Amino acid sequence: MGSGSETTCLTIPEHVLTSSGRRMQRLGFGTAAYPLVTPEVTKAAILQAIKLRYRHFDTAYIYGSEQPLGEAIVEAISLGLIKSRDELFITSKLWCSDAYGDLVLPAIHRSLQNLKLEYLDLYLIHFPLSLKRGLYEFGVRKEAIVPMDFVSVWTAMEECQRLGLTKSIGVSNFSCKKLADILAFAKIPPAVNQVEFNPLWNQKKLREFCNANGILVIGYSPLGASGTLWGSNQVLENEVLKEIADTKGKTVAQICLRWAMEEGVGVIVKSFNGERMKQNLEIFDWSLSEEELKRIDQIPQSRGCAGELFVDEHGTFKTVEEFWDGEV
Image (cartoon, rainbow, N blue to C red):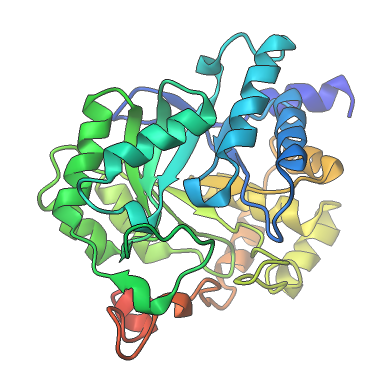
């Protein structure tokens, strides 16, 4: 990658989070690897990402990537790649078995310890449900799901922000209805809702609701999470996207990421492949035409991460519709 591409990287659009005034690159680097990889592989990928000028990193307690991210940050500073941690925007997430009013503060302290950091930039509730205390498996046992007490958990999240342990707080995988439940009593509203987002699930209704309430949507699985348990090749194999990519001499992944930038959302992209990490940044010196945007807008919609994992006819959420409050 020549210097021309590196200067392209410098123009990653930023969003200023109103709750903290912190600047966040709208293209973030994801650290959730599936199948799981060793901490050494994760750390090496993050270091390479920092060299390529990624500055926004997304982790979660349950990913097992907090420690390698923390080690990569220490090494990046010692190598002079960044002057201080303040140049980075770090997000982590509260796992469901810690989603209890009295467990939120211990959970963020544990994440900060793993990351060797004094503060997070953004702390999210990972899913709108609780699991029985003490369960830390990468996966969800349906019989362990219990309804979350939104008031006590969100009040504790607000306390994390007031104490300076995180600059902003938000949620992930929340429907409009569940967001409205939080907004009804929140003293500090969620800054972000991180949800599935790609051309096959463009979250129009949710984005309208979030925009109206000053909540930034950040998309995960922008390429359809191909190769994971919950994802598929449907996005990367979509004929409309392939045609647009061929016409423009770009990859389908680049079309998806450019589209997300033009839609005004944040997006978390995960690749530990060095060449694709570079390609994912090469989306800022060209744009999609009105006609191309219209074609993408007309792609039939279907949720990839449907939430079957959380659904049990005898459980808290009896149907997929109930989990998403009919927003399917």
